[in-house]
Image (cartoon, rainbow, N blue to C red; front, top):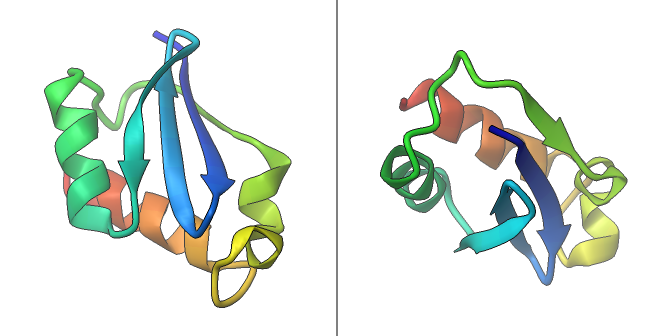
Length: 76
């Protein structure tokens, strides 16, 4: 399973196996999407550079997208 995250328009975009699953602006939403697609902490997860430069995508700072993703994964 290929799990991929982007930062886009102040939301985290989740794609699985190159299909867009959805967008989330908080950890709970993202965790729900991950669970619904049977993603676990054991899956390898990949990040676009947009996640590293999230402020360029409307987030409050460059760490904000990573924080949402890390919090969502911790909820799994």
